[in-house]
Amino acid sequence: MTTILQVVPELETGGVERTAVDIAQACRARGWRALVASQGGRLVAELEAVGGEHIAMPLASKNPFIMAANAGRLAEIVRREQVSLVHARSRAPAWSALHAARKTAVPFVTTYHGAYGQKNALKSLYNSVMARGDAVIANSHYTAGLIRDRHGVSGERVTVIHRGTNIAEIAHVPQERIATLRTAWGVDAGTRVVLQLARLTAWKGQGVTIDAFAALEPTLRSGCMLILAGDAQGRENYVSELEARIAEHGLAGRVRLVGHCADVAAAMNAADVVAVSSIEPEAFGRAAVEAQAAGRPVIVSDLGAVPETVIAPPQVAANERTGWRIAANDSPALAETLQEALMLDPAGREALAARARANAARFSLEAMCDATLAVYSRLLV
Image 1 (cartoon, rainbow, N blue to C red):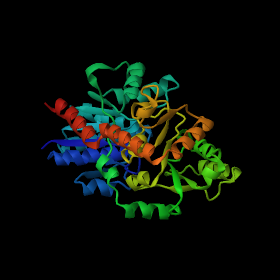
Image 2: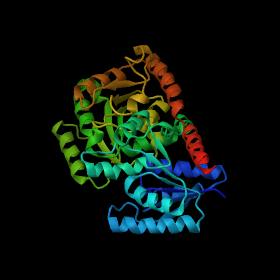
Image 3: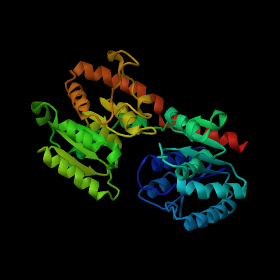
Image 4: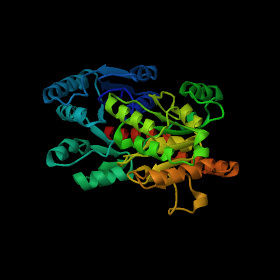
């Protein structure tokens, strides 16, 4: 039996973790065995529910002694479980997985998930493991460019596979789930929601979104609430900074930090407008696709890979857009665009929603899984 071992730091929350579970489910549907080694987390139960098997290891550690021990243990797992292919999705565990794969002579795949910082030669070396796979998956054309420019890898060894979204799930969310989530957020039935769904970290730009919301025309703002949904992952100082910013603008009660959101599909459908306000490049940015799948107006920072997912001028005419692309870290531009999106008439919103849903279909979960398993199959011949 074909056995695929994916290696990730943990299975807590985030795009890397979610994609590992999605691919495990696709492997099981193909009749393959799906193993995931990680430090564990809230997604382990979901992995096991779709037929995957979890192996607990301290793979989030960057301690070189622990990484070396992980390499030895992964090699043992490859031999014992007769693993056919190893797929690494993050740098620290990828070094351990690379040594294990080379020691056991099984194919090694990497997915370059992030626009990793690279300020010196040591960091360049550390990042380079993600370009050392027998096949290297880039989650966007932007990421493929980074791989080429940083590591000199291109051609057949690099395959662009955009991160996939469960389009059908987002498009068909029961109203009860949406209403339940809005109630949990403390949003009244008549209040409109501006949503930013991203983990709470400075580069995601929550501060920019708060400043933009504060700059909305007061009458318009009074009928809205800004929901910042995302896990702080221990960044309590950043949470305090955001809370102080909210207080400075006098927006207590109008802006809410609601923590981790497990029901992304309901969240996107509960929103009236979605903001993706990153101030540093996204390697992909699935929130923009999820918003479009829900037919919601989405405003994104025009940098990194996000422009690959949102169609907007000057690429097309204004009446063909699926969302808005604006300069990053520009709260006045975001405020102006939020106002434009919130003031769309019903016909304009419906036309935009139809275009957005059609565009989101290009980034389906099925397409991502089929393309990834095709990479596996090519190496297993």
